[in-house]
Length: 140
Image 1 (cartoon, helix red, strand yellow):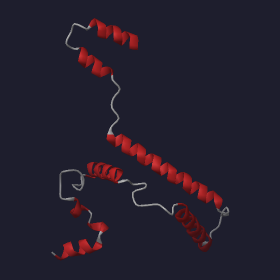
Image 2 (cartoon, one colour):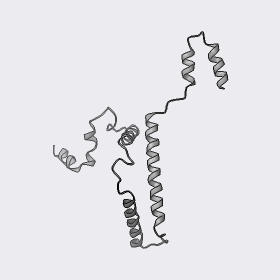
Image 3 (cartoon, rainbow, N blue to C red):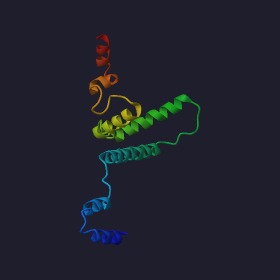
Image 4 (cartoon, rainbow, N blue to C red):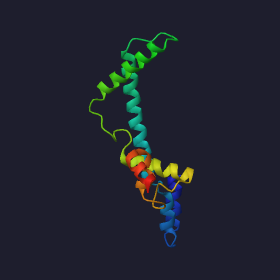
């Protein structure tokens, strides 16, 4: 295939369309969005791996209908994960870049004006995250 493309390019050496043909043979560039989602997937996989390792370190929970036993197990698992991720910070899984990409995708799918350059400023779209600002806005 490559040899055929080279022969084709040599045959077109006198023609002005060689740059177009050469461009068509290049591999498509990896988009920044694709890289961001790949990075996010890698981060989630690391978290799942840690979660599974911590879960396997706890005694196995036998099938039960007792709410107290289930809740105790969930709390023990949560505590062990907190200990294993004691240096965790906001953005370790949802980096600012991937958060923005998710906002764009959700906005595109829902028709919401909160992402991208169109629509109101981001502050007006994130009132749910700050109840004080939301109640102040309601009073206006």
